[in-house]
Length: 196
Image (cartoon, rainbow, N blue to C red; front, side, top):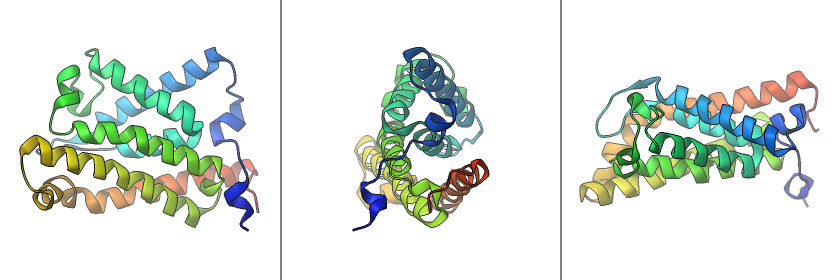
């Protein structure tokens, strides 16, 4: 049996900075939410879904903080954005964004952060290829949520929704989970905490 499947590892930021008390956890999730907000505002305003760096930040949040704190960071990000802060793509904010054409992608962030966190807790992010596979899955789940929601929102077929909400982003998003894998692998390698 593969011991990597059964072992539990500390995610990178949890191990490096010992994020244990509620104060440090709140600080970590808030910083992550701000990082996601910043990445959302580095975007190209395509229609009906803008192209941004959010999903890269979501993968790194999950991998760095783990499942629990990763999900809390995403929920904090969504809550602050819904309250009107300019946290969503293009500097938008408000509850209306959570029911817009791109809302499904935002909901997919929660599951994506969970999967990236799970991968980190299994040690997959410590090795480039296993990290790449795990982050590819975590990243694609965003599109599952986004495309299905888009199909319902626009009252179109799933194939048309894929054409609108997935194909224009596929190449750039391949680069994003590649970069996430490279970053996490480099961080672990630099820290000398790789598990062989």
